Amino acid sequence: MTELTTQERFKRGAADACRYFDFMAQFVDFKPEHAEAIRATRFVVEKHIPDIVADFYTHLLSFPATRKHFQKKDGSIDQEYLQLRMQHQATFWRRTATAVFDEDYARFVDYVGRAHTSQGADPTVYIPERYVMGMVGFVQQRIGAALDAELSAVDPELAFRAMRGWNALLVVLLEQLSRVYGEGREAETYQQPQEIDERPIHQLAVETYERSLGMARSIDYREVIAGSLAEFIAEGCKIIKAEGLSIGVFFVDGKWHALQNSCLHRGGPVCEGPLENGVLTCPWHGYQYRIDTGELLLDPDARLPRYPVEVRGDQVVVQIPVLIRDHVDISMAELFAKAVAAPVAVEPAAPRQLAANEFRVVDLRPGHAVQLYVDDAAVAVYNVDGTFYATQDECTHADGPLSEGDLEGATIVCPWHASCFDVTTGAVLKGPARQPLQTYRVVIDGDVGRVE
Image 1 (spheres, rainbow, N blue to C red):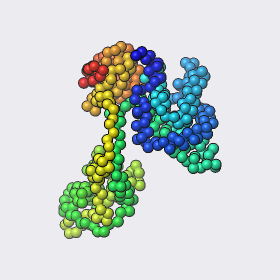
Image 2 (cartoon, rainbow, N blue to C red):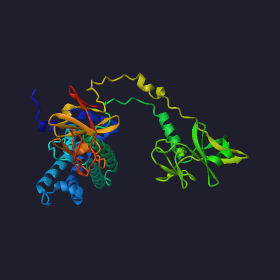
Image 3 (cartoon, helix red, strand yellow):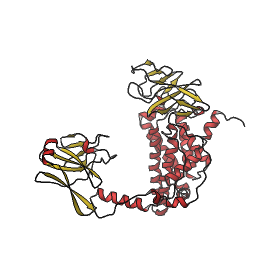
Image 4 (tube, helix red, strand yellow):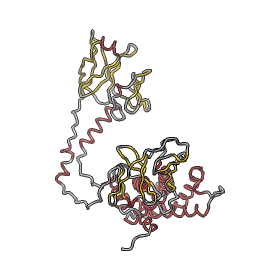
């Protein structure tokens, strides 16, 4: 078999591009009827592509951060390059509007994503991911406006279906285009979803939502003794357990407060955090709440549940509501009962899944870098003329991502403030950084590299 040239390999896209596109389409619930609605409105959208492309590049040129990619060294606009990009943009959306999402299309999208980075045909190109995301969002709005203008008066139902189809598709495209910027901590294994009983999940969601609005009724209150009055006068706060809840009880400035000890963000022990000027700060991630109302400062509509407190003699009593609804118990066995009886599809053998500290040698070309992880620490791996080196990924000046910088020989240039380091030793070659980088050992085992 003739080996593909670099240019041909780029144009073909990643080998699993089609599988990845199909998997993400399934994950975001992009259905055949969505594709059909896009296909049915193809010529409506195509009619507006010249205006969409014109609006988009007008937008790009208005921002200095994106205009620079279309300027010559003397500051003038490189019109030839601008027209080339316009042509590619129009081709991309015209091809997408045909709604033929086969292997060639998936590889085409993958290639377009790589063309925005140094992993494309031109290693000097790098467009930050945020601008690729912005492009998709911009086009999404323009396509929606085009469908609304052309169809809402004559066929509103088709306009609605087409907008739904485009919205779902653009989420898939966004993921496919940005995939090249990083695969994440775990490579996708393409495991198929199992059929699930949605009823207990729906019941739990309704229960949770109504509780957050204070809609859940109670038939009674269970009284729980939190402690003695003397304890609270001395300590000011106490955490109690009752009805499966953790509750923080406070005596502050002569007033009583009892709040659920579970942060709305990730369930952190918020009542165990510092209390200053009537504001509780969760010790996990810093979310803050008013102790008198339970309001989340970032969103006053979100509140921690609060409970009535009474003092009876020398005892402090907290009243906890007992709700009418039965407890929702989500059983794994019941959720996937349908899946157990269903035939299991046999997946084709996939390449060995890489660990967070591993990479495929063929994927890391000379003059390039990639980000990996060693014990949760971000590491940059570099290919210097076929020899691999690794350092910490964070620049010692301001934590800039070195794996996104330019590798010039054995010198990595930080993309944030241009500090330079020798990747073979970690030494600082140019400031503003002053501290050297931590280095790691790279071991090559067949076609896989490993950072230790």
